[in-house]
Image 1 (cartoon, helix red, strand yellow):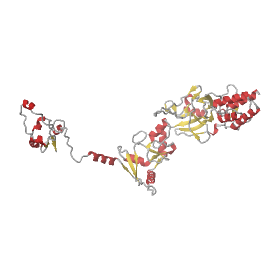
Image 2 (spheres, helix red, strand yellow):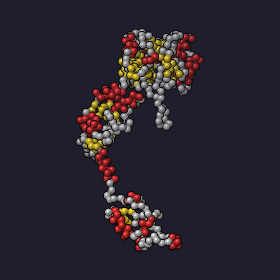
Image 3 (cartoon, one colour):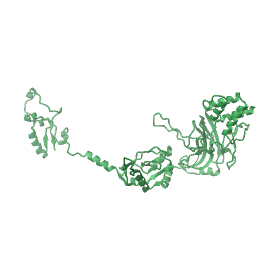
Image 4 (cartoon, helix red, strand yellow):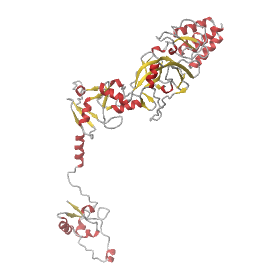
Length: 493
């Protein structure tokens, strides 16, 4: 009786949320709450109301989740046995073995054997050291520790030891640990669980941190990429132990270990340059198809402008690159795009924000020819309906010259020094006629015109400067012109 009770409780600990809700509903209990609440409620139910009917329900739920499990095995997990997975199987051919999980032997090939991780452009998988294996919660605690064990063959250890270094401390051949959601549908991207920490052979590994966000109110994102565990491994046939600490908040995760070769952005660019270049003729055909006249469309497009400035770095494009699935003809710089994804892998088109995987990138042959033929000052071109192109810079320059060239000379009446005359106030006492004659003789044809004099002032302007000071003080102040500044003589041409 006691043995069956312990076995039933261990079974309940391995249930998912849906299994716990089904069990509690069948026994008339509330099925609302978080997973740790449901687990505690189900365990109390088993302890207080143990019955053959309850035992039958627990068995059915467990067998529905693990259909390959061979019966009800009454054995508790021995002390010191780690929670390991398919890597503990002693059969080299991949035969099914048993691992202890929550006190119950579990087949090593389930349930995460069907999980398929997405391929990464900067990583080439050489060998699988540990296939995708689910991280199983051992209790209702939020933080869980799951351990996996794997070994390197002598050939694999030598391959890692003798590989070149991409930079100090980073080898070209690495052993990486990858984590993703446990889902057999589709291909899974790398995804870290909350509160992740990785410890290999009792030493903590570096896990990529969070990237700060420039947008206010947006939480920083964590780049989920393979974790390099090579520096902490035993590069021999000795057993390596990796412990993953993760937050148990209701989602299921799987872990895998691979032997990979790491590429740099320069190596990926070399692959792109040799394997994915669209010819100039094919690019012209694409332009003609895009600008072809459509009788159903009321608006006819006669040209399409394209910038020669990279939207990523705001500099002139060096190697024009596009995504085959994008509808636009605008290119971006391939070298900068690969370098940015090497540091922060997003693989998103900088023009339209659609997915831009490495397999769909191509170098635009026509844009490459245009960049070689045009001067660096040209920042924009226009594609025409026949597949040809023209630069936009000449038209802009003509507009600029037309707007800056006046049709008549400009006279600045406020700066008399520009015409070689001093702003002496006594010069205003001369008549316009005598002033014009003297200036005409001195300046070779220039005409001096006092633009601030009224007609009355011009008639009485023959008054000399020989009047006494006292008379000038007694006489009324001379009339001023329409402008509130001293009158000067200027030259009009």
